[in-house]
Image (tube, rainbow, N blue to C red; front, side, top):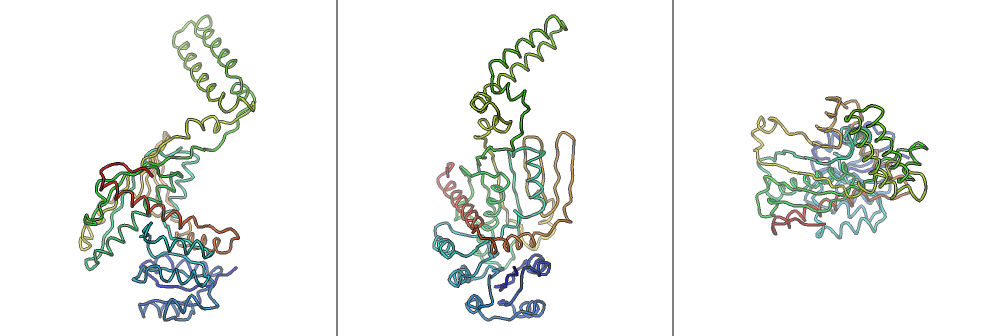
Length: 409
């Protein structure tokens, strides 16, 4: 199905993200109308996509030949174009900033939920090739995350107002919070911060989050002999003890082998206790099930910071030794991400470097996901809920700074 779309605003990422994506996905999207306040930019886009120029967003959303609107620029209109699209029954792709107020924008959220239209918030870090590859490595090589360090450095134009700087910083922090939650695949339980007071200058913000993972890893089937040992822990422990004493005594006569056997006995006893919980009733089980009890309460700490303290005219200083976009310490290794497509990770085998520049660009991935959301029979508002959830965490960090304590969520 080819979606007939209208563009509201073109924004800073038009040339690098959205324009190339719409060109590549011409079989899925048909740009019918464009509304942009920059005349020359609008003229070029109208000519390139053979679309109609439109004077206002109201005229855009009320057109019969429009199925969805792509809001690609943050303007003084705020949520008004999206609210108009909801009333007109048009699907919405929102790339106009994530500076949501959990309380002040509650009516906007309710309007989207009640309208029945598809809504997708732009979260480009989720769709970066390095992020998707990291999720694969967590499931196969690195193990579950333990610590995350997420630091970014941005720069605001000198003529930018304080309100615009505030919105830029808040949008960046909200996306970083969402990114960490996406990597962890868990729920944030608490937040703590010392410099997130709303009255402080918007030059630096840092907060510490504590996530709780679900603890449900991939289940690895056990062979039949191991299943019996897990299902009958007492007999398994007895056999382990007998084998250990025999190995440490008459066969080898060495104490080192006896210690090794004793360690094996302890491991089997520990496995037996887990087996009593998960395998005793059914007589069969999996490693993932046995470890579930101990892993269900694992915690992950995420350190997040965003700095806007270097003037825009100091371009050389802004790019000097930039921190890794994300550093993840896992059970079996550590990984470093530089967006969008560079991933370096370390494990017992050493260093591994992956360049993912040949993967599909982020813009294509996001618009393809939006196309699936619109054409699917199942409505998914996960992006909206996740963005508001991250905004609530940021609001809690401000409360933490005001009260000088950790805030439970």
